[in-house]
Length: 284
Ligand code: ADP
Image (cartoon, rainbow, N blue to C red; front, side):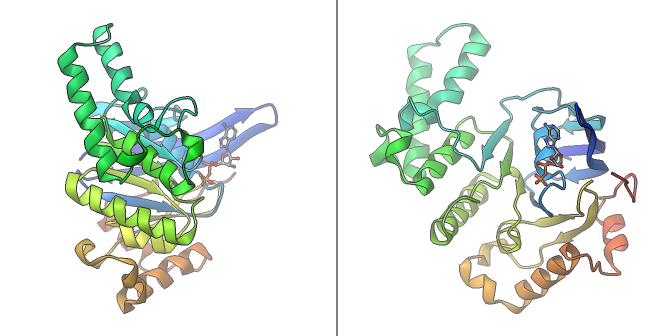
């Protein structure tokens, strides 16, 4: 397994007491698999993503990447969030190059050689061309549209050639058309690089369009209601898929779960797909 989560749960402690954000859960994610996490707001999806990223410690359980315990953020993981996270004082090109510069300084304690710099420049150029921003390489984030900013953020998430991509509603703030363009770009990129991806969204269409598997969470404290294999081939996916009967069937199934009308097959799916809640019921 690329990623293995065992008994991962989270309770936040603060001045106002404890918030049980996520019930302990187990999850196995295969190499190259694209999984979407959907569920009501506040059910712990972002918390789970931050735990996998090593940005937030779990209060229970463990996360292993290729059999090694995740204890903090690492270069194997590419991150992308909904909010604008580009550095406003760096150009698009400098923003995309930033993780490489950082990784090199960490690894060598130096600025790196001229050969390294050339390789980095070529890598950054390749990605900027791929996401259609080469002509804007010297622009600053404030000079770009929201969609272009997210394309730059996507290039930055991919530049370190991560093995796992963690995305938290990355297209949530975009208008419908730009969002579709970004979804198609992301599909193209992940098919090309076969990156294992965990993707948080509350858009069921988006989850079905992009994923191999959709994991549906209950209201807070989040627990897994179902894990559904997406049945149609990814190669055939485009915005037209949304009219497909099989697509609509799976969409209705997920919406029913989100509205609190679980199917009878849920328990069986959990067992078959290796995805269970360690605790099936969780109080707040
Ligand atoms: P989602 O991504 O599904 O909307 P989150 O993971 O952001 O949900 O949050 C889950 C719950 O944990 C929410 O009730 C939220 O208020 C709470 N929470 C998130 N982060 C913190 C924090 N740093 N401190 C305290 N509570 C938090």
